[in-house]
Image (cartoon, rainbow, N blue to C red; front, side, top):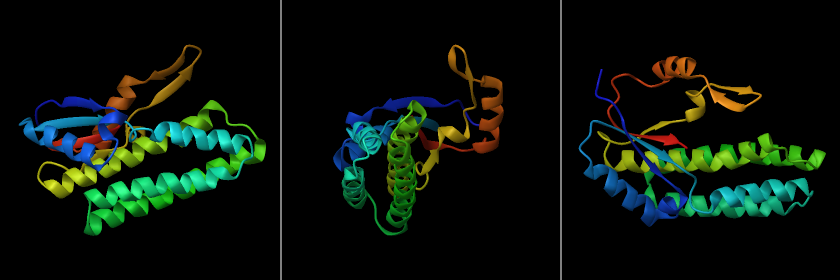
Length: 193
């Protein structure tokens, strides 16, 4: 088994645009550690924009469709500045599928005119997915040896909802981690926040 992970966290303002993604990439490539985990937030302002979609849908305001398209245009512009070829196609295809999924959630919210916390969290979570996927693709394009791995925390963390709120089931999550993440993986792995 390789050495332990060194973990870094980058918030939305650190990933606000293509230049910020590049700056974070340079910082990460400067580290010589074998295993670097990078927990990323959504691009700057993206979480608020996604939450606004849920609010509009709750008010049965179809403007959420146009605003989702604006979010997609911003994401696409950033991806086009960072990626090319197959990497770009894969990232944009994933975003296209996620935009359809977001639309489905928003239509359900509009139907019942209610956006419970779980629905809002689902919609907002797509910002982290997009950011992580984009950053992993960018790092992989810069260095196939060191970058390109991304881990969806939803595939690893197992949470129980108790009277005290959500609780991570650490033993079950560790077992899931062993299933999802290759024990010999090295380089930089980007993880949803």
